[in-house]
Image 1 (cartoon, helix red, strand yellow):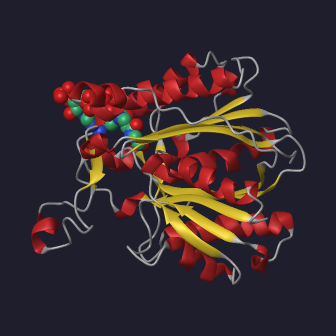
Image 2: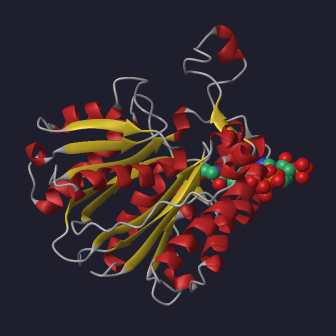
Length: 348
Ligand code: UT7
């Protein structure tokens, strides 16, 4: 019995490609980062680090930081309002808002509710998705299902994080990496073959200890002791996370290419989670992609957790052409990881 259990645990778990006719397409994007820039030089004054170390180990030159009194919902509101303006839509037209974040405004209610209220989306319902750096992919997959099954016509998916709220600016292992920002996409039923085609999403809770926030939840509610022990900040064992990220993000990206008969030539762009330039490079190599197809903005924003992929969309939207083959890939705390294959649905 024990042998059988072990065997079962090692069977590869692979979600099946979609066969449905109705596809969900991204039809508009929006993005936001706050104005305040924190450079590597600024961080040299706070912790024992150097601009050279940060740039060579991560690819990051600077990141953004939100003001006190602002929250993750404020990122989503700006991004969604850009979408509404571009599409000439009314907030009442939105059916559903999903927010991927690990820095919700509050433990509850969901940030999606707060966002809906702030923008006046009175007909929308909403909820948050917690999957750390893979959050946007998990939320995009979830949101697309409501379009595919015909239940909704307009779904907003946000990926946003105010990481400065949970970063310890005395810890050089983490404070140099993370930044604030994010974005949103509108999902609508596709009018043609373009849209979200396939996804492979994975999670493995055995990796939780390597990247997590120790306190603040029901296991360790806030106390003087948890605060004194600095348990409300991001804790990351970088080297271990790096190893898992390189292997899993590259593997899942290759897998989604192979089962959709994509090659390095036929993929137009890789939009990978921006955690570390070296992880993105390893993924691109495994996909046999030319450098020009690998979208990078980590140097400007650092790692904005759930925000990185929608921020890539908003920065590089003008490059995308209708029908482009785009692979999204992410790896994050949890562990969580995955890849999504889509065909871009519009020319901007
Ligand atoms: O986004 C979600 C998933 N997260 C990730 O994908 C992050 C994955 N991990 C990483 O990106 C990298 O592991 C880091 C950027 C976090 C760290 O880079 P590394 O090349 O793995 O460095 P390391 O942790 O192995 O540390 C190497 C050395 C150590 O010193 P010793 O022990 O060799 O003397 C660290 O103490 O670098 C030291 N170090 C620093 N030095 C200057 C660690 N952080 C810093 C720093 N400045 N900020």
